[in-house]
Image 1 (cartoon, one colour):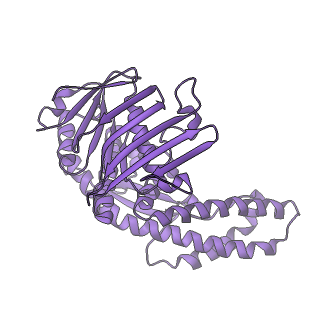
Image 2 (cartoon, helix red, strand yellow; image 1 turned 60 degrees about the horizontal axis):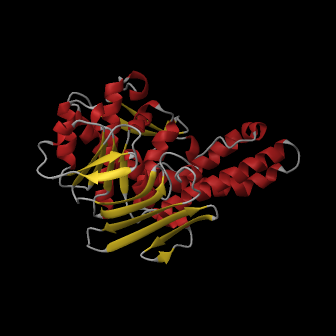
Image 3 (cartoon, one colour; image 1 turned 90 degrees about the vertical axis):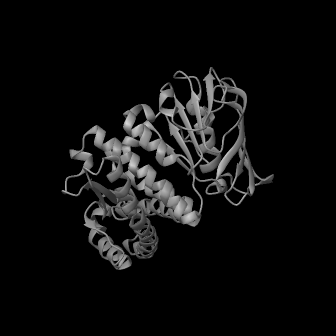
Length: 372
């Protein structure tokens, strides 16, 4: 999958901009706050259906405007063309795929696959378990779009079940009502965890492999999936029975707190050294950064193995975070595999050994292609 060309109208600091991209590596140079990351956000929005920077799309429209429009022409590995038009205005948003308006704008998800590298990736190691769950959920959903709807159904169920728990606690509902909710929760939770475990069985060795290469073979990391941060889960576990038992044990506490305490929303993906020490607690920032990069490179492999084509790679000013050896290693891994779109404030020397790449200069919402 690659992006052939794109257009932005009233998007962030762009009044109007059009750009044609190389199928290999594209680098957007410029000082901070000139609009480089905005370009990656636009691509991500057309692929995923939401921004990676804000949940409020009203913030994305150019200052003084209440709407924005994006357009992109994508080419698949099979040569098929996909055109996407993304419009946001005060009345809502609409998305067209090959000229056809989608019934739900978020149905654009999964048609274009992307992997984003950004400075925030350190949260994969330093942040709470929600960041690691989101990591596996995002790439799993890009491979299996139906999984995304399973997650949405689970989230809706948890909201409704929490309301029932509060009503029971406050004396407005009977405890017997929980039986049906518990059975549905056990089923959806089992589906989510089973898919996560299947994905992790593939992703885990890929992460270990990339981390081994990036650390020059000096370190090895392993991943474990913990149910509620406690019991280590495996594909051999009877998940339905597990959730039935746990919900029965926690019923009194859940009612008292008015909150669902059991389910995939509380699980942890533990990342640690083979010695048993966790990277979140014992890893240096450099070790955490290397592990985060390995996780993103593994996501690239995971999408390729499961879909037959490489995703588009978006690198937001991450090369500056690595020394020259790791810069060269990263570019060497990416070159010839995925279309890569990079933002950078400098460091042109890192690209000197690349036979062909297209470079652009970004300044105050204007994009100028530099001579090749």
